[in-house]
Length: 143
Image 1 (cartoon, rainbow, N blue to C red):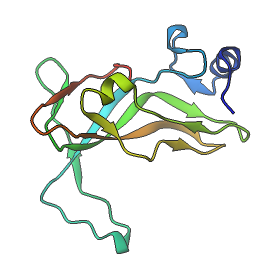
Image 2 (tube, one colour; image 1 turned 120 degrees about the vertical axis):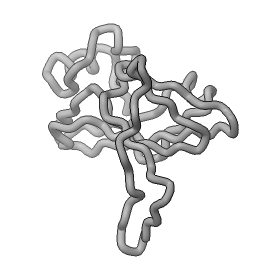
Image 3 (cartoon, helix red, strand yellow; image 1 turned 30 degrees about the horizontal axis):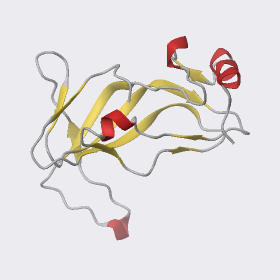
């Protein structure tokens, strides 16, 4: 069940989701923003899924203007600015903004927050799926 605008305002006012401005609350969603942590895949690594390994990651270097550039095929893990403190009766689902998807940015299908998830930012699994266009992202941008 989706929550209404007024239910979302109540959650934000109660501190369930921290770092949300009133203009980020929509009719049935809250617009989250990109945080300060962006890690990019080290393309020389091998991960063994039978050992539950993950790709080796390193911090993505910022450009002079503070942005990050995702080149075609880049896979990154990034944080949100928002901190989630979900009560035991509320789950949340993350979906990428459609305007970003139309630009070639894709979010993998791990955008789920279980009830009771507390005191953490959301980890975004982003990939530039374009064949020849780099994508600039910035801390604080709606994602």
